View 1 (cartoon, rainbow, N blue to C red):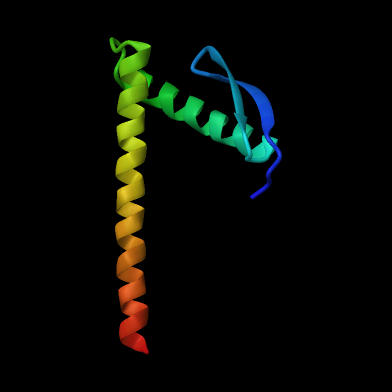
View 2 (view 1 turned 45 degrees about the horizontal axis):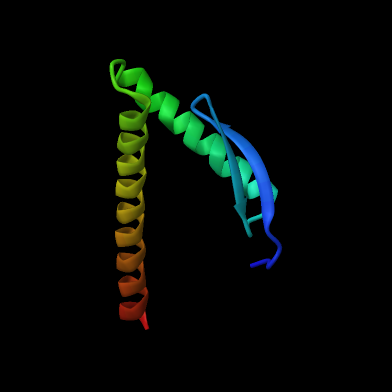
Length: 84
């Protein structure tokens, strides 16, 4: 990873965020777009939730997806080990 700190301003769910990190600017923007889209999708089916609750619910959904993918990955590694 790069040692250079990139500063990028992005908009997520109607709010601007000045982000600073060592990720490439394009990746930061892609992450912000992804999160913005996911929050809008969550809000669409939960019309009465506050932006903070939409953010938490979206984070929980993303965390659940991550854990499912992690489990799938670990199972795949086990299958590969068994094949050797």
